Length: 249
Image (cartoon, rainbow, N blue to C red):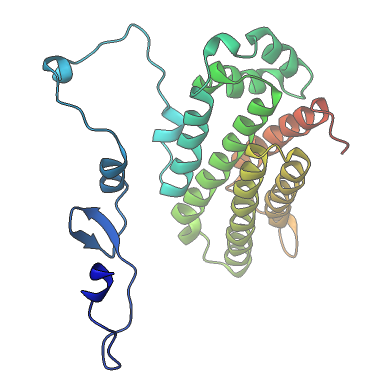
């Protein structure tokens, strides 16, 4: 009661209330800091003599696909996929032979093996559900790379048809990026049917962009054919994985 009475009563002419994040003893800020929050939550111990020793493990697991992605949003998706899968022992990982057998059922086995088998995150995938998460992550990265490419080549299209088509592709890849992101979130929650549906919407948007270069005017070479092809092949992998997970499509 004494503590409550020590707090001044609200005044009508005072400023509006604000939400503040605690960042230390008697230290509050309107900005959230994950570092300061962790420092308050974790158990502190005395620093040991070996704390500054640099370890050199014999085998590392780099995440090049994450590091090459330019936007923070995709970095978050890629890295979180890595951390979630890495939380499980590689001894429980799906056998590499199962991945290779899966790829043989796709339309381009070499592409499938190159995308999945060479991805370092596959070493921690426990089942086909985890592989599906990785496939959707790879699709999201392809779509994001296409968005970056659109920004770099859009000025090359000065004619009315080229400007219209690159604008349509920009909008379509925005749609695809949003849908693949949401598909990834659903795959993490094991909502595989919804993940597949959303990935399909993203795939359709990408395909519509590609087809647009031959509609309403003379056909032009699409600058996004490579990305469209890669997304289409990855979607084929997503479709196959969804079927093997027992989802009716």
